Image (cartoon, rainbow, N blue to C red; front, side, top):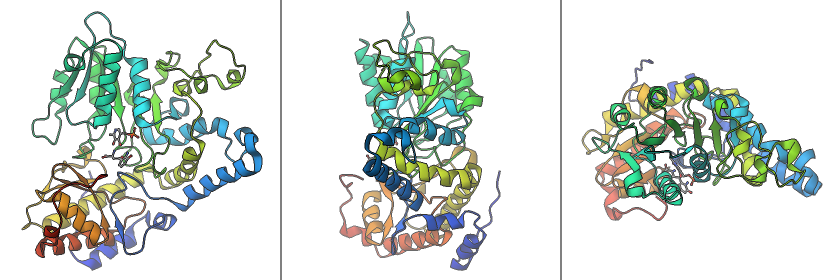
Amino acid sequence: MLSYSFEPTLEFARKLDREDKLWHFRHEFYLKPGSIYMDGNSLGLLSKRAEKTLLESLDDWKELGIDGWTQGRHPWFYLSERLGEMMAPLVGASPEEVIVTGSTTVNLHQLVATFYKPEGTRTKILADELTFPSDIYALQSQLRIRGYDPDTHLIRVKSRDGRFLEEDDIIAAMADDIALIILPTVLYRSGQILDMKRLTEEAHARGIFIGFDACHSIGAIPHSFSEWEVDFAFWCNYKYLNGGPGCVAGLYVNRKHFGKLPGLAGWFGSRKDKQFDMEHTFTPAETAGAYQIGTPHVLSLAPLIGSLEIFAEAGIENIRQKSLQITQYLMYLIEHELKDFGFTIGNPRDDACRGGHVSLEHDEAARICKSLKENGVIPDFRAPNIIRLAPIALYTSYEEVWKVVQILKKIMKEKQYEKFTNEREVVA
Ligand SMILES: Cc1ncc(COP(=O)(O)O)c(C=O)c1O
Ligand SMILES: Nc1c(O)cccc1C(=O)C[C@H](N)C(=O)O
C-alpha cells in the first residue's frame, strides 16, 4: 500500500513531475498543444514509435507486396503471435497463451463459442448488470444460437448501489445451473477492480469456467492470469495500450485448454506449418493461436509493435505505481478544490480496488464535459452522470492534472456549463 502526501499548489505539481520516473515517455507521444487529454482510457494517443512501425509496415507493402508476409520488417504472417509474446507480460501469461487477433466483441464470441458447453441442467451464463453492453449483446446472441432464451439463461448479478459489484454476491450466484462466467476485470464506469483470483478459485471450486473482459485493465494494471488459472480473457488494445482506433484486440487462453477446438474456426487458427497445405481437415495451432479466425488486419496490428516496446521499457509495475499516484493526486485536488460544487467521487478509494480512471459523478455531468472540451480538456461522459477522467501514466503530467482541476473549478464557479444542454453527444 502506497502512502501519499500532497499539497494543492502548482509548485507541488511541478515537483511531482520532476520526480516522475516515467517523465521521458511523455515526449514519445503526440500531445496537442493547448489541450489536456484525459480520455486515454477510451482511446489512447498515438506515439511516435507506433507511427513508425505502422509506416514501416505500409512501406513493406509498398516495397514487397505479397512477400511482406514473410520478409517484411515485421513479417505479417507471424505478427499476431509476435505481439502475443510482447503482450504476455502485461497479462501475466506465457507467450503461447496470448494472441493478438479479432476485436474485443468478436473474441468474446469466439471464447463463448469455445467454452460454453451447456450440459444437463448446467446451461446458464453468469454476468453482471454493470458490464459493457456489447458483452451482454454477445452473450444474449450466443444463448439464442444454442436455443436458449437469454431472459432466463443470462443471469446478471445485481449491484447494490449502481456503482460497484460485491464479490460475495457474484459468488452466491455461482449456482449449479451456471455453465460459464464472464466478468469485467475493471468496471468501465466506476473503475472498480474485481478480485479475479478469488472469483476464479470460487468458480473452479464449483466446476465452472470463468473468463474476463480486460478492456479497462490491460496496460493499466498488472495481471497474473496464468498463476490465477483464469480460463480465458479478452481485451481491446486501443485504450491504455495506444494501438489506435479499432486496433486488433487480444485474447488469452490458459494452456490447460490448449487443444480445445475453437468454437469458430478459420484458417488463421491453423498450425503455421500446415496452413498453406490448404487441406480441408483443420489442424489447429497448439497454442492460443488456434482461436484466430481469418487474416489479421495487419495495418491495425502494426502500431502495437512500437507501442508495446514502450510498455516493455516502462514496465507495468512502474506504470501502475504512477497511475495510482496521479489518480490519487487528482482525487485529492477534487476534494480540496471542488467540495462546494456537488461532485461525488464514484470509484473505489482503496488502491487495490481501483483501476486507471477517476469516475466523477455530477447531475450536470453531460454539460460539464462539453464545457471542459470548450476549455481544452478532453474527458468522456458516461450516462447518466459520470465524467471519466484518466490521467495516463505514460503521457499525463501532474501539472496537467492540476490545471484540469483549476479549469473545472472555474467552469463551476462561473456556471459556464449552463450554456450547453445536459445531453450526451453522438459519441460521448
Ligand atoms: C469493457 C468493454 N468491453 C467491450 C468493449 C467493446 O469493444 P469492441 O468495440 O472493440 O468490440 C468495450 C469498448 O468499447 C469495453 O470497454
Ligand atoms: N470502442 C469505442 C468506439 O468505437 C468509439 C468510442 C468509444 C469507444 C470505447 O471504447 C468506449 C469504451 N469502451 C468505454 O469504456 O466506454
